[in-house]
Length: 506
Image 1 (cartoon, rainbow, N blue to C red):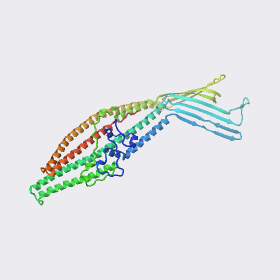
Image 2: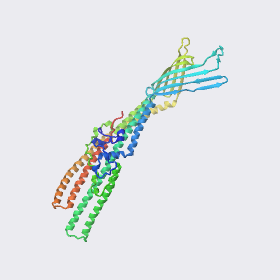
Image 3: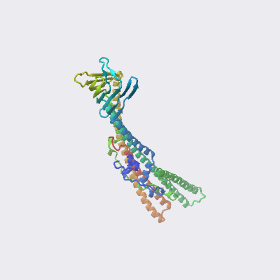
Image 4: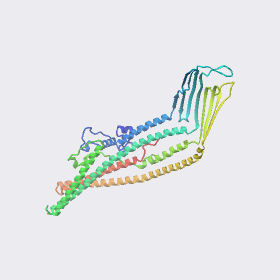
C-alpha cells in the first residue's frame, strides 16, 4: 500500500492508488486509431488504467471528493469569524409638526470556536427640527445627536456553543476523509473486477484446453479403431468418428464464446480489437504477458487501528463522546462594555452582565454604572425563565447517553473480533494459494519437459501427432493455470488492502 501509484490524471488528483501499482506495473498508452491484434501491442498497465478510466462511478466519486472539500471550506467559514453589518431601521419623517431623522446602525463579530467570543457596537442618531420644552422648567430640551452608543464584548465561560461549532468542523472533515477513502476503495474494487474478468477469461481458456485434451484422446481412440480394421460403414467406426466431431464442435463453440468475451473485455478497457481466424487458434495472444508476479502482503503488517471496521467504530465512539460532553447542564457567560449617552441613566456607563442556565432555569442580570462624579446611580437589568420539562427529561437523556456509549463499545469489540477472524481467514487463503502455485509449477515443469520429449519423438515418427498435440496442450493448460495463480495473488493483496484505510483520520 505504501508504494501505490496513480493510474491517470483524474486518479492522480483524487488520490486513488490501486494495489497492482505497488508491484511496479507502469501505465502505458495504446494507439489512438490502431486496432490491437495481439498482446504484443498492449500491456497489463495500459489495460488496467483504461478500465479504470472507463468506470463512471469512479469519476462520480472523484467529484464527490471535490464537493466534500468545498463543504469543509464552507463549514469553516460559517464557524469562523462571523461579521454582521446593519444600518438598523432608518426613519425619515416630514410633517406639519416638523421634520425628523433617526438611524440605528450596528456592527457585530463572533467567533463560535473561540468560546463563542463576540463583540458588537451599536448606536442611535436622532435629529428633529421642532423644539421640545420641559414642562417643569420651561426650558427647551435638545434630544438631537448620537445616543445609546454601546461597545460590548462577551465570552462563554461554560457553554456548548463553541464545542458544537468545533464538532461541525470535525464532522465535515470526517465526511471529506470518508469520501476520499470511498474513492480509494472503489478504485481497488474496480481493479478487482478487472482481474476477476481477466481470470474468468483464463478459466474459460483453461476449459478450452481441457476440451481439446478430450478431442486428442478421442482422436487417439479413433486411430486405434481404424488401425484395428474397422471400416467406415461399421457402427464402432461411426460412433468414434461422431464422438471426435462432437468434441471438436464443443471446442469450436468455446472458441467463439471466448472471442466474444475477449472483445468485450478489451472494449471495457477502452480498446477496440479484432480477432481474425489466425489468432483465434491462439487466444492466449490477447492475454498480456506482463502480468506481475507479486509478493504476498502480510495482513498483520498493516496497522490494526486502520482496519476499517475498527477505525469506524472508534471514530463513532470518539465523536459521540464529544457530542455528549458538549451537552452542558450548566452554562455561564459574561459580557462587558461601554455605552455613550445611555438613555436610561442619561450619562455614559460602564456595563457588566452575566447569563447562566441551570437545567431548565435561565437567568440574565446586568448593571450599568454611570461615569460621572455627581450622579452615581446604577441601572440594573434582570430576567428569568423556567422550563420544567428540561429537568424531567435530563435524567432520561443521561441514561440514553450511557446506553449509547455501551452500544458503541460493543461495536468496537465486534470490530476487533472481526479483525482477529480476518487474520485466520487470510492466512488460510494465502496457504491455499501458495500450495496451488507450488503444485501447478511442479506439474508445469513435468508437462513442459514431456512436450519437448514428444515433439522429438513425433519428428522421429515414434508417436502420433495427436499424442504430441496432447502433450503440448497439457503444457499450455498449466501455463494458463500459472497465470491464474498470479492473478489469485494479486486479488488476495487487493482484498487485504481493501480492509484497511491508507491513513488515519487526523
